[in-house]
Length: 285
Image (cartoon, rainbow, N blue to C red; front, side):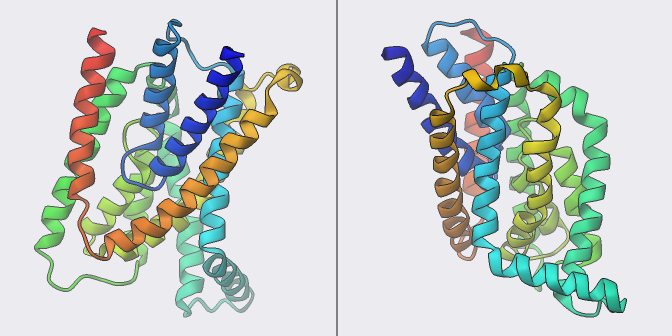
């Protein structure tokens, strides 16, 4: 009974963590690594490499956040898709939504190429929470300096162009390393490209759709022990997925409102503190 209750609490917490950290610039991969390792410590279990169940759970939590971003941006996604398909037929990409569709396609290819060079390193780091903490600290500095740079730009761009999209896509690829925030690095890259925060964040979330889809479904398939699937607690996994989707949706909504009024500095400071604490905790305890 205690074990099953602990397992339920674990998936609820991890669902909430995934929903929050996927879209906030604080690295979802880092927080899932920290949460999983902390719970193993609380349960007095040795820290181990992720099991097939852990991979399936992570996959479903990512699907939850994918559902969140698709629902939140459903009108934009449908509009971009339709106009991109029409532009491909007519070979006329003058419409901005059609351009965005092309940017997302090209950006996804760039992200995959960059991330492919880092995949082995990223996999090894998933079992090194102290190093992940160091990379989270690096995320904090990137956010901090991107805001300082943005403050010097009087007339920021309110739309993402091809150059900005490519730069943001490279940043998204680098964020394959756990601890480097995907949303943090992409938004920071947009700020360094002289775009405003809200435009960067909205495009970052749209750009994340194919990557979250790939990261949550395609990539983990090779690591899953399909013979064990029937033995998994799918009710718990479903609950975690729903929590991830709900928290993710609310996070997108309020984060975009926040960016319209405030800077990313508070998240930079959070990454500094969380990164240092993670290094200390997982190195000396």
